[in-house]
Length: 495
Length: 82
Picture 1 (cartoon, one colour):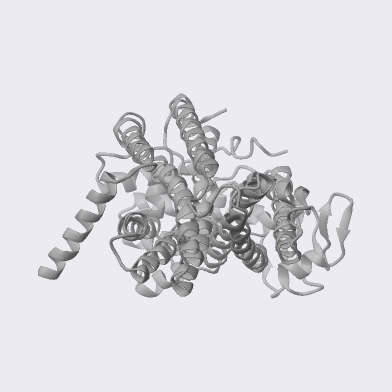
Picture 2 (tube, each protein chain N blue to C red):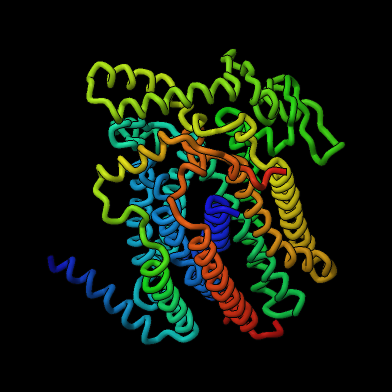
């Protein structure tokens, strides 16, 4: 394998590792804030102790997850230096805002939440708990603004002088931060975190119920966890719908790969698994129109007319326009003749949206690994629905007081803890593998974004990361299991 | 100014007392410190040097401009394609 593949695998591993901690942070933050709100409103010490237990687990997850995102930034500078230069301030600005915001909000409010129980008033402490979660959520927004721009590069202009994508005005900055792909990605990611936090609380509570320990604590925690998880599940479905519409609009190849759709058309069917289809469903999901046109992989390769009547060129035509853009860029950078420079700039501007296609050697290069994207999509949806069902059944069992008898449901809730992580990771596989070969959609393919490094150098750091990540993950799981084993300080063991 | 000083001393005492009275959280603090040392003291220093460190902005533009305008091969783009 060459340096591009090793760098991609390394980045994927780091991002996947980072995403082990983020969703639980986002979800548990909401759960514990709700619990502490109940304490402040009801003035009931039980809820204080309950919130303190989940804050403890939040802190363990937070401590191990801290700074794992910084490694991605190391990789941008070392492995993806051409990309880092190309994206310019567009990428730097959101990440800098995220870094500063995360540092100040987390350093202040997390400290008050963690150390301040006896130092500030209950209301001030409650505000700090909410603000810790809100801070983490806002941080996620800035990261997803950067990611959303890579999927749908709006609001920037390519400057051939600096070879960077630049934001020319405040309006452009607004366009970047209100990018519809970023907004739906943010909603989808954050609410999937609520599902993670919810099912984590439900699963841990189920374990206490199976062991007949801390029964009141476990039932009340399960109730809050299941409600948060179900609200998250509903919001994930709504934002997932919006993500599907945006994929159809801005990244139709990703949608076609996720559906394994070779030849599209009007009234396209949704494939549940190969051989089982729901007629018209894909058109409805992708275009909100029963008979809307959804292009397949071959349509995208050969060119098609979209639902608004726009003629989308074939990939071969895009490659020609991309090469024109790159040739014009070369002329622009080499010549001192102002007339020639102006002509080159004009050609570049006319074709710049397809510039990345100029680097491709054949049209099929734009097709991502279909099998991986197709099955990851099904895994994500299938597990998401299973988890929502388990959450719903837990609520029903709590209402009917059946939890003592339905031990299978308690086991299912525990099993859902690892499953929710597989579900979330599958979602990112769809999002990121599905947009290959692009680092920036249509503008920069991965093999151009890479630094001139040796594969051996990347391989070395890959295995160092693998060892370090495995060690820290093992430590976290051990500390977490010990904390859960010790249990909350709310009531006698056999209550 | 006095108010700012008050806030600062509040946070200093918050952290100082918090760390002093910490029980189960102590291993976590050591874990964070160990991680930061590995990340910034080893990986950043020895393995993750910025590829364009030391270049001026003009040199960076030149370097990336040259990469963009050179012909590329995409044999490695989709090795995972089924």
